Image (cartoon, rainbow, N blue to C red):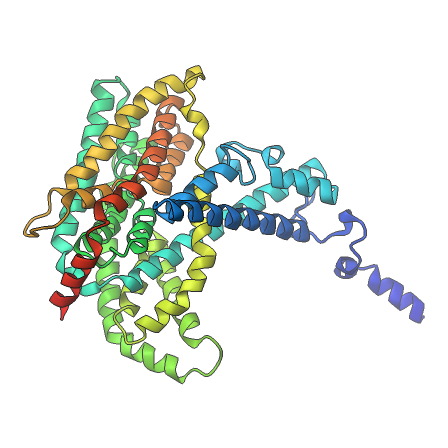
Length: 475
């Protein structure tokens, strides 16, 4: 009887993981009948290998750029390109049109674990999704950290200038890009509008990282750029909603636009007001906690909750994280929290920048491919509009003598992952042709990579004096 019970128990699936002699006996993470199995240990192994590649690329790229006086974030982007879809293909993604056979990591896993082709493909898709989610966590943590380091008083002080920069930085490139595509390239109205909308975006993560690295985050220029980029992000969401509605229905849903505008304004103002009221209670609660990491965990709870609320009302999660940082940055625990959040940022943030680089496909820059040529011509036009449209916005600043307006405009240039989102949605909806999609991707690549070195050059003599002025004025 004893032998029978033991053999019965150990024959059950719940004990199969204890004896992983045969790869086919590994547990299933998620698989319906007739579908390929995703085996959890193999999935974990794939994610770990991906993270090894990400961190190696970020550190090598960052160190090289740091030693030649370029922003380390540029090295992380370049490192991502090298290990990504354009070169080594250690990190590739199915949404870019790749399958598991193109992934160096998946080929290694398939050889090591003897997986079937179907199981490899299923594992590849889930692994790519995990890395993409970790990347999103990276930008959420980055914006939370930036919010902590920003001065809410200065952001409010420069609010009118930031709003003008943001509005002009959306209107000018959108109008110029759409009109140029309609008149010069004779592109249809809806594709032209969608491509023009892609020009409105600003990747706050890239610019904010550069500003933090060179010590200009609390300078006048830095505060205006951050404020404008946050507003620009909100406006970009609204523009995307409008053009997506136009593609689907052929008309603009005014109610949806009004909802997004009011939702964004209510959310930001509400969080700041409520946060100022509850900030002291939060500090008191943290001081009463006795378990490990009371401040860090409590702060992350606040940041993730506000990020969720922002996403729930159709805004960007990073907006909630930034608002959480602003609010907690006004409390007495700001310095301690900045110190404690730094290691978390060191873990997550490089994933974001390397993934942005890895998803960048430089193959669209190859003029030897006939289908790329029209896209490159369109890209040249989009690049000019994308750069000049944002630079113009910097010169709209008023009542700020001595400010580096060119630096503000340059800080608004990078489109980064935001521009890729526009391109992806446009392509998926059928609004963009291959050449127009390629043109947008090239524009995103160029604007993302040129901004860090130029911004650092323009502000390299500014941070100390401007930061001192900002601190003295706030006292």
